[in-house]
Length: 599
Image (tube, rainbow, N blue to C red; front, side, top):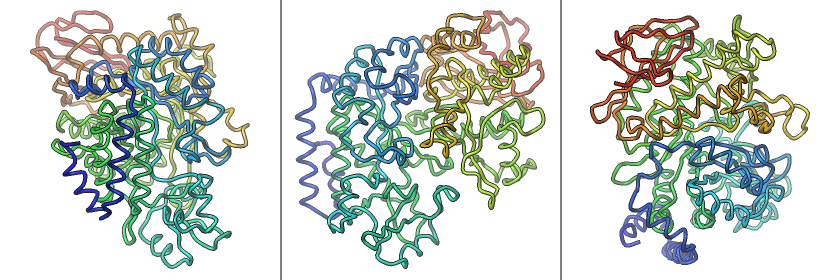
């Protein structure tokens, strides 16, 4: 507190100018610190001695829905041996707080910030899971939904009754004038499924701001009561043993008339204060920011080295560009973006992933792509046709999300395995296609593990799980195609993970080897220098890691034909997957082949 109090008070007063609310915040912070368990305080002290703990070379995340993975929190606890076997050092539990069936947005419409959804367990179950995870060397990550509440949250219920104190915690207007002014400058998130940014509440004759869905009411962070109460919720879960707290929809938190209500400077004030509050009360907790924006808008959420904000951010643009690269067999844009990330300070830690719980939006660098003949609207159409399997020769399978017939824009949904062709090869019972699809899947993982930052896999990817179309039979899910890649974990398929004659066994064993290498080799750690290398062949991506006099070269063939490649370094090198010694510096990669060569 002594370290941070001057800056914290200055920022709070700049935003709110309210001494009594600041005093209340400080008093509550002390209470949460006082009530923090001895075991968690010990964890705080250890991590203060190793502030880069979340950047370790063996960090590997696994995202999962509790019910889809193991039924409930107690079920997850019973499956921790499998998670450990998968080398996951932290598990990201997708939203598990109380929500309303049919109006949950996958759990992001929170009705009670202090209650776990009844079918998933209790807060006590969550704390027990955290304790068990910590004993096994596993960290726990949760979603913290700051931007909005469910319309069934206590605040919203009381606001709907016309109670001014609670109406002031949202954005209410008794006529359409101001909402119409907002609509002129604020983009729509879901223009087809949830058009507009406001919803009419007939019970009280007011409009309320609803950026995402009509049942998700935006919180008014111009009200210090909202900020304080949400910080108390944050500290409550820190005290249940959460190690990483993912802040959902960070850029949207502050609203201001005449702006896009995205990435405003006050958002950074709020995240900076949240970072300091964490360092004061629970320094073992890291903040993970969800910022689905272009790179120049993502980077500011790291803050500065002197005044940091988020510990980690998702590498969203690189993820989307990776799939673009696969579809066009052209690595130039991917190389450009990797070069940007690799030039940043090493303290800036990205979470790298191929797939997550959400759709893929094609927010690519079209200013660059147009020079290569790829214009935005037709290129998005091509990518969606390619990955849904409509484009001739495509082996990918999936579905569109929020397909807008006016703008011709849409997002894409599907598992990694289905996008790589494992689903279609299995349907056709084509062994040669399956071999290529598995290699494509593994090539993308090998490339992800070579990137600077922390890899994250979506539960099921480690066994090549394909799309689940049964969501169409569930009336609560059938309108949301994102459930195609949120299918129940197939434990019967996981039983095949040690049988290398199966798809599951081949993928699991190779990822197991990659993960062991990453944990063992310092050259795959956070301090290594990472760069791309110009290959002269736009279908091949080459990445080079250097550390302590050693060099690791990763070569990734995005072409659907074999390629011969000359390594940048002279002299003998060992290819880590085959164990082969390459004497002449020349390596042949099959279609979608990959190699890690150590010198």
